[in-house]
Image 1: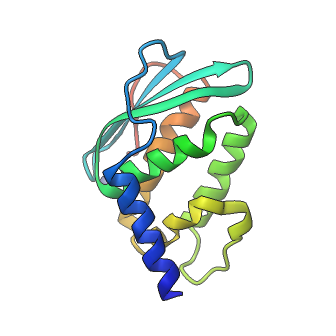
Image 2: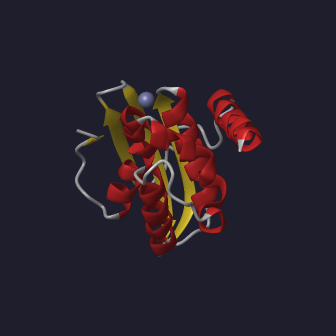
Length: 151
Ligand code: ZN
């Protein structure tokens, strides 16, 4: 248990220091801004869709280690996935992160998202971890141009 927690922290720190797919995409189909006023996290998610497939995904902006690494992990997981798969994954992620701290987790379904399971113990951090996902989902649904706020 302790060793896996240390491993999770390492993954989060790594993605915070070297975020993947971290660049503004100039020819994106969808550009969605996400803002978490509680913490000051502010990211833009860029998407290029090919029908139902997420062809390219990137993000840019600034925020705390949790929000940044969560956005980074999200982009690595979703490239090449369908919109439906992305929504399903967010459902699992959201369920995990809002579940009781002693609830059993299905690590097979969650895969890499398990690194954020510790966030369950810090409710104030949940919005940091889900910010990029909320922005993504509203982008996939083609909702307005207004920035997505966690409030
Ligand atoms: Zn944050």
